[in-house]
Amino acid sequence: VTTPRTTPATLAPAVQTPVPVPTRRHPAAVSGGS
Amino acid sequence: MTEDWTAARFAALGTTAVVAVAAPDVLDEARAAVEAVIAAVDIACSRFRDDSELMGVNRARGRTTPVSPTLHEALRVALWAAAVTDGLVDPTVGEAVRLLGYDRDFGAIARLGPPLPTRVVKVPGWQAVRLDDCPPAVTVPAGVQLDLGATAKAWCADRAADAAATATGQGVLVSLGGDIAVAGPAPADGWVVQLADRHDAPADGSGPCVAITVGGLATSSTAARRWWRGSSALHHIVDPGTGSVAEPCWRTVSVAAASSADANAAATAAIILGPAAPSWLAGQGLVARLVGEDGTIETVGGWPADRPEPAPAGRRPA
Image 1 (cartoon, chains in turn yellow, green):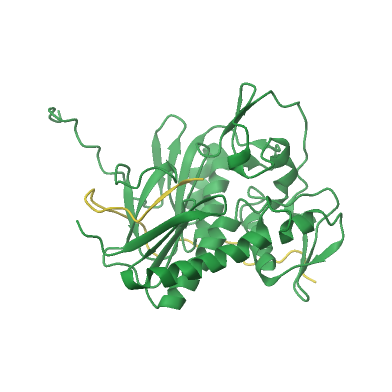
Image 2 (cartoon, rainbow over the protein chains, first blue to last red; image 1 turned 120 degrees about the vertical axis):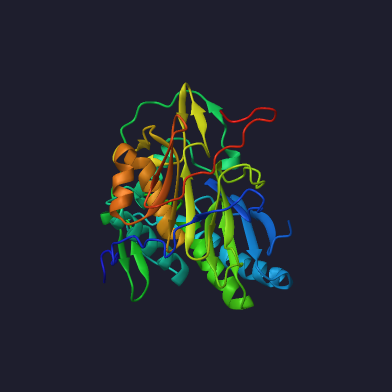
C-alpha cells in the first residue's frame, strides 16, 4: 500500500524554451483555456 | 505559405481535439491512435458519465474500489499534481465544483442563474485519498467527490501524442482543449502554437505564436467555461483553500514544460496562486506567460516577448 504515491514531487521544466515565430507561419493549434 | 504538417479536428472530452502530423499520409493512423486513448480516458475519468469508473469511485462511500490501470495512472497524476503544487491543484474539489453549478457537461450548464446560497465548503484535501498499487485500487472517504478535470485532459494529451507517434513513427501534436503535447520528430521549425484566452479562438495567427519541439504547452484561463449565478461570475478553476473560484489576478497563464501534464498543473496553480505566481513559477524553473485581468503581460524564465502589434493601416509608428 502506498498512501499516496506522489514522488518525485517536482515539476519538470521545458527542455527547450518556446521561440517566437513570425506571423506568416500558420499555427497548428491554439493553446487557451477550455 | 505551405505548412509542413496536416491536421484533423474533432470533438472529444467535452472540448475540441486537434491532431497534427508532420507526414500527411499518417494522419488517419495518428487520429485513430489518439481516439483510442481518449476513449479509454473518458470511460475511466469522466465526471459526467454515470458509467465511468470515476463515478463508481465517487459512489463508493468510503469503500476501497479496484481501478483499471488507466484510472490508476490518472489518479496518480492527480495526486502528484496536488503534491507538487502544495495542494493548489487538488482532485478532491469535486463537491465544491458541483455546488458552484458545474454539475454536468459544460455545454448543458445554464449560463445565467439565480444567486447561489452562501455555503462554506471544506475541500477535504488530496491527502485523504489512498491509492494502492498492487492490486490497483483507490479509497476515498465517504462524501468526498473526486474531479480529475484539472489534470486528466493534459495527461491524456501526453499519452495520446506518445501513442500516435509510436503508431506512425512520425512527429505528432495533440491538443485537447488547448492542452498541447508533442511527440516524435517535430517539423523543421517546430510546432507553431498560438496563444489565446480560449482554445476555440481562430487559429489564424492573429495572436502571439511560439514554436515548441518537445514536451507540452498548456494554458489555463478564467475566460473559459464561465457562467453566472446572480451577479457572480463563476469559472471552473476552484481554489481548494476557499472552495470557491480563484480570486481575480491572472486571466490567462501559459506554461511550457517537459509534458502537458506538468505545464497544465503549473498554469492552473498559477491562476490560483495569484500575485505570487511569477516567483513560484520561476522557482520551479518553468517558462511561462501570464496575462493579468487588465491585459498586462508578464513573462517568466525566458519566455519570449510577444511580437509588436502591427501598426494600423495608414499610420506610421511614432
